[in-house]
Length: 114
Length: 114
Image 1 (cartoon, rainbow over the protein chains, first blue to last red):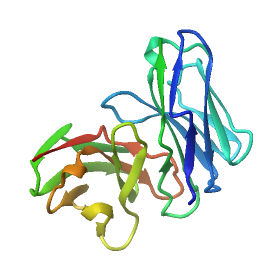
Image 2: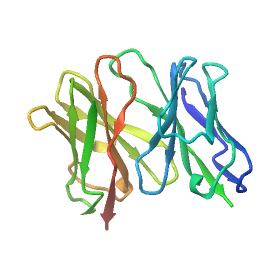
Image 3: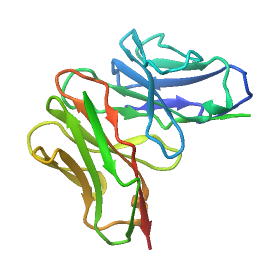
Image 4: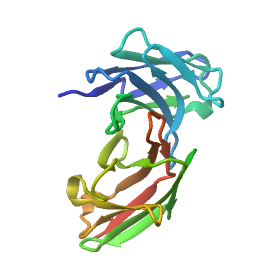
């Protein structure tokens, strides 16, 4: 089945220790998104890619960066995690063409910062 | 620009009772509307969507929603709640005409009592 995969599902890191979260997709969608979701809140868009074009939300901290080496893979790098970065991180994809381009979400990575 | 308002951060129903989750939107152009469900520690899953055509849309797990342009609403209903319906529900709007950045409502937590 076509899907969005996130690894790892659970990540524990130490305060200030860089961490990378990964996302892969078999849907061949050209748009990929990274969201941060804190408890009892809606997902908050951090950035997205339209093909290789990177789009950063204005309020995304510089501490967060992303890479998309090819259509299938996308990475979220947190350079110096703080306690406030503990959250669920969701990757999503969509096709930019066609009216029925809902987002497909991965299962998420729950990040704990000690 | 678009926005989404979900009335009620929590909705509590008894098993077997009608489920009604409210969503109102504002949009400068005809919108595409979606409902997603999120179970604990999981990603979001599409329940149903409205793009064009029939205004009453049926989704998975017995849910349906009706697009009412005059009321700018897209309420989610289910005739009879199951315990397994307990989850977080998000109403999402996306502008037609090529936009691929959706706007999320804040979410409604559905609580089902036995």
